[in-house]
Amino acid sequence: MKYITNWQYSAAILVLSILFTSFNGCGKTGHEVYPATGKILYQGKPLGNAQVTFHPTDPSGFVAAAITESDGTFSLLTTGAEKNGAIAGEYNVLISKNIVADNDITTVTDTQEKTNSPTSIMDVPVNPQYARRPKMTAAIPEKYAQPDKPLIKVTVAKKQNNYLFELDDK
Image 1: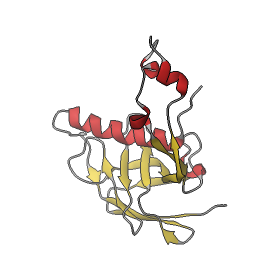
Image 2 (image 1 turned 45 degrees about the horizontal axis):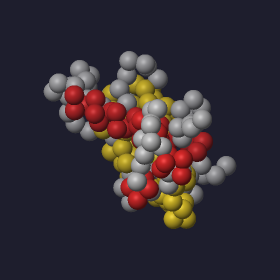
Image 3 (image 1 turned 90 degrees about the vertical axis):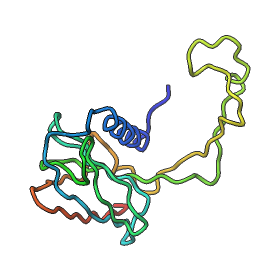
């Protein structure tokens, strides 16, 4: 059985958020969005190219997400909003960053290559040349990306919001 990793879950949420924005009419949430920026440090150093996602505790809320710059800074964008920021409310914050694991490459299995009568889309024969992709590993502890056990909780206020998240291995 294949499981979805936390970074895949977070990436899927970000992609779905962007797609939802594209198909949601004019892209209006119907809610006021307030500037929400911040910086992420890992072991005291800026954490660049990390994904930060604010998941609202209210099920009817809108997800806000960003990718950090090389200096660790980010500016949130809310699903369906016309400008950067987040809707006021309570959020669980998930942070993840993945890197290529020692240039190790994942390829399809011999069984997949020899399948002549696929029973599902996953069984369709694939040319290994195009199926090769690097294996990814978490660059920071996965505890920061656990949707069922969020370690960071914040409130977005009806004003300029600026956050500093200092992550460690503890």
